[in-house]
Image 1 (cartoon, helix red, strand yellow):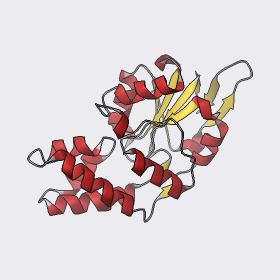
Image 2 (cartoon, one colour):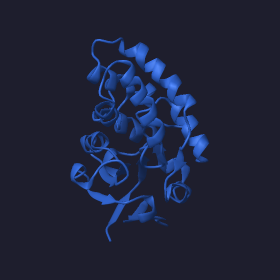
Image 3 (spheres, one colour):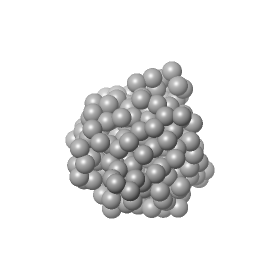
Image 4 (cartoon, helix red, strand yellow):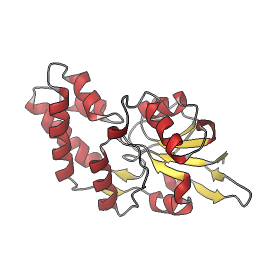
Amino acid sequence: MRSLRCEAILFDLDGVLVDSTPCVTRVWAAWAREHGLDPGYVVHVAHGQRTIETVRTVAPHLDAQRETDRMEQMELKDTEGLRVLLGAKEALAAVPPHRYTIVTSGTRRLATKRLQVAGLPVPARMITADDVTLGKPDPEPYLAGARVLGFPPSQCVVFEDAPSGIRSAKGAGMAAVAVLTTYQAAELVDADAIIASLQDVRVQVLPSAGIELEL
């Protein structure tokens, strides 16, 4: 067991709080086939980063903004198989609302839709693809998350499932806990700790100040 102390928690959404893998796989695979690309490769690249950056990586010849807008509409319509992940509801309920937020590579509309479908609360100050210029693995998303909560990055802990998100968190000066839902442990070695799910986390709000996490 390992303990981490912090003042605030930043959660990634897909792969940490909700399992959207069936939706993501269907939509990206269909898009890849439409453009003559390898679906397996495209789906792998898409995890953990903004849609516009995935399009620029796998299909630089396409209009990235137009394809991003199309993909958002496709993802908004596809929620079949979406489910809340183990421990997510309990973890969010244990943390005071002003001490956590969600930092996701999806758009605000898509993140809101997935949270609502999963039956999870929608934070008032969520950081999405709409709020940043550079997405993960750049530190900007997690620095923005710390800023809206009002805590120094060094006092924040991040829960992530993707290597790009872990690099973003570490680049922002935050401790990162990896969740084994999307990638193998060997791909998450930059994290400070690795857990199977949020069910493996005990959250305790300290009487003095701060939060203690037992992993």
